[in-house]
Image (cartoon, rainbow, N blue to C red; front, side):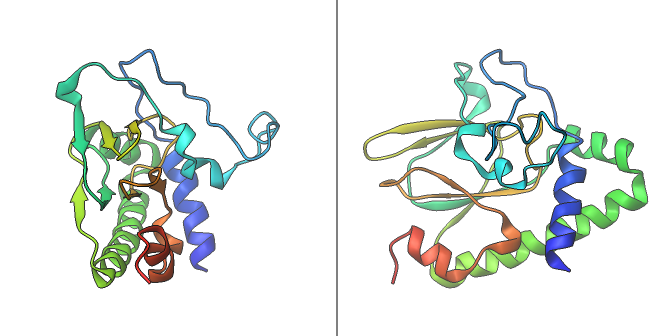
Length: 178
């Protein structure tokens, strides 16, 4: 049942993305199989591929920099909420928002139980400063979920993770906390 809800939630959220002002991001998701989006098939996993978030952004006022190990909780922007309400209707949107909030809350509890700090995303771009590499992610890119979670360990690439399937073991493994 949870998987079914996640798929419905993801489909709903994908239909309501916000376009970006930057010309360096693409609306096309990199999929697991090259023909999946062309054939009209939904690729759930594509929403969680780091490559689909990568962007170049020079306007520092739109970039939140993160240079420490943490989990970034992403909630929809006011524009995304408005778009989802229009597309889904207020009653359906309320159900979607309730489900998404439940899974975000569950993920936050798991992350806290492992002792990882959580941060709320407050800008459309996140710049993760790692020990050897930096990544700039467009978290408001069209076709990506409005509610999301990104794990960041300075010694690894950021990990975009679905909240619905997050486990404490996944968090421990990513952050090397056995």
